[in-house]
Image (tube, rainbow, N blue to C red; front, side, top):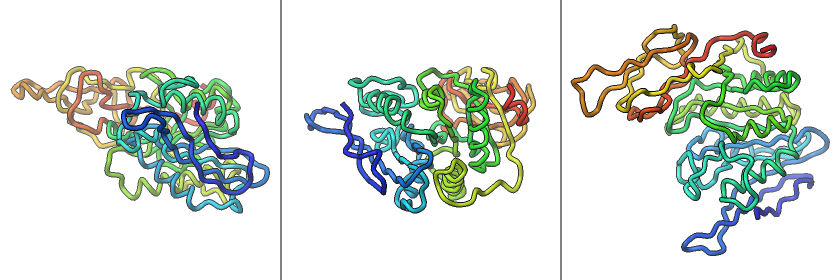
Length: 335
């Protein structure tokens, strides 16, 4: 049911919308209007640039909006499709999940052509936009729930050639940390769907929270441009990092520390710090029983504190910290 008037094969620059039917109490024939920009010129790769997979993650949305305004066909080799706020209802509501159907865009794949709004968008990406694309860039941050060391990241896909290309593109973002991660919270992820279709997938976790420092915006915007140059879709010279990136990996469940009890989370080490197995990284303070000794949060592995919970008020089972061990390029590419 999703509709667009955009012509994906048309050269030049187009601005339009993905229109998703959505009937509500005050709008029987309403549509959700998701802004899309296409810039196309000549032969080259097709790159799909996505921000706002989760609505409360704005770093990528701002980077994609700025690029969409600035790009001209003369700067492009191939085709760049930009959707700054993919989960548009969630972006307007500053929420992780869509307020229209309660769905998580990053758990909605493969989607349904006639399902809820989020499911329709997922289905459209899976069946039309991913097959059109050679490269998929999915920009994330921790949103309101987590605070990350700004990093580009990737999965360890089984295809070695695909993995090597993703690894090189991850490094091209230019972040100090790069992060190899696993999925411990469900299936239906957007990057996994694109990876399964053989695409070069680049993802990020660019900080978090509602207050975004200028330094993080700069990383989001410069990194996006550098990756587009790296894959050959944007004219220019790729800018290498002055120092090698710190490669980290959290692929075991014990790397992801979950709150054993509800309460107020106090982190006791700084983001990006080196952590030893058995080290205390925080405490859960008991809101109703301040006389009780706080619950100690202990690292089950060694590495770097790559992310921590942003809101202090924490429910049992919330992820409060992730410890990512340092790995070599050889380990990443040959694992």
